[in-house]
Amino acid sequence: MNKVLQINLGGYPFTIDEDAYKQLDAYIKNIRQHFAGKDAYEEITTDIEARLAELFQQRLENRPIVSVKDVEDVIARMGRPEEFGADSIGDDDSTEESTGGSKSEYKTGKRLFRNPDETVIAGVCSGIAAYFGISDPIWVRLAFVLIALSGGFGVPIYLILWAIVPKAVTASDRLAMRGEPINVSNIGKIIQEEFENISKKVSEFSEEMTNKDKKEKFSADLDYKLDFRINQAVDGIGDFLRKAFNSLGAIWKPILFIIAIVLIIMLLAAWVSAIFAAFVSPPLVQHFFPEHTGMASMGFISMMFVVGIPLLLTALGIFRLVFGTRVSSAWRVSLAVFWAMNLGFIFFLGSAGVAQFAEKASTEHRLTMDEFNSDTINLEIIDNTDNRRAVFSWLDDDDIILPPVETTVKIRKSEDEKFYIDQEVSSLGSNYQEASELLDGIELPFELEGNTLKLKNWISVKEGSKWRNQKVDLTIYVPEGKYLHALPWPHTNSLRISGYYEDRNTTLYSFIRESKVWQMKADGLACTDCFQEQEKEEEKELEEKILKEEEEKLSMIEE
Image (cartoon, rainbow, N blue to C red; front, side, top):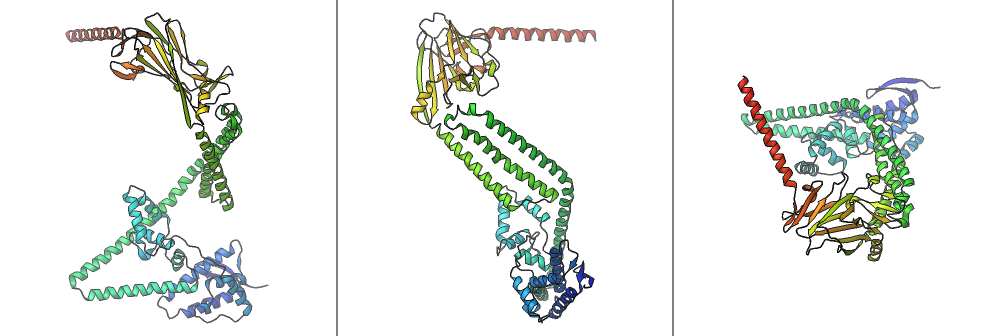
């Protein structure tokens, strides 16, 4: 049973075993004796005690008492007195053996600080240079300037780093900034260097002042004071921004928590959708990749992982900011590897899909209308009312309907006195032979009944055919002097119909009206009854204008 004592070390209270206290007290006295003749004696010993307190806090965690083992390990990490030129605190071989053997196991990682020794504005660039081992911070400063001048985020990034990166105040901070071991020898060395630099600067300043006249002395003194005030202002702004960020953290944490919950809900919705698509998609996917239906369905699941894993990691990152939770590095690496595998699989499917559309085949055919005796051809568009909203849907379980935009219709002037229709059917495929075979599966989207040409605003391919961007282009030739009657068209129609109109190749939808008659003339189509309506509208506007003027005159007379 040992006694315990209460001590104050580096401004922190500790409960320590009596034997451990004796060893620690001897160690600190030895350090004080070693640095007693130095100019920076107080600063060195204060920093060393602060570092000792920090190491004890790290070791104890939830334990209440500092033991002899704790003291020995901390001394091993800080360095024994004889290692930096002081007298030994004891000759116990066993102690030296246990502490000396563990000394090399301690590693000090670098930490990012603002470097106050080489500041231009706030020491951010010099701190980054020290962290990455760049000897001259001018290169980091140039990088920030170039990013700012090129329209990047150099200035806001600098301000954010200024606010969140702490300033290297103590010797321990400066050593951590450089990645050097934080031990007694290095702490004493760096503080002594600082005092020597300060003494050197003071000597240089005094010598310079003695060689100048009164005016130069006044100017130098003013510059010094101004520089001092600027540094004070810079530090004050940095402290203010840091406090502002800490205050905003309390406000943003609930918002970030809500964002994380929303991301998780989105992830679950995407997962359910992907599973549903994987089960429902095979009948549709087989029209794209009949040989690889299962692999294409797996693509839906892979897409979910490619989108979902970043969402999940973002949500976990927010939880870490809000609650301080951590995710093991092994789990993060596993997720990253799995995400990369799914991304590679999607790229593989994509490249395989693109290869299926490598070659194009087309065929042309002219439909003569020798038995067509009327001077007017009616143009009627049939809407697919059962499948208006579907990009792909089945018709009678035999055909698949392709998007309406795959059919284009052109209106042109006939070279003779006859109506006729040119049709061009095209398809893509992995090779020319496959593309040519797919042409036979396309059902033409029109039929002629009497003098009415009925156009479907979709095309369909037979069951068993692949979708390879099949298209049907129609050209309707109307003889000069004869007519095209545009019947009322459905609102869902999306056929691309174009024709020459007053010497301009334009889209009929820009001027055509329902139930209007168009005559083919030498320079293109012309509406035969559009002007009558225009005249009626103008007459109506004129009557309304006259009536309004009469009402104004009557009101003036009454007044």
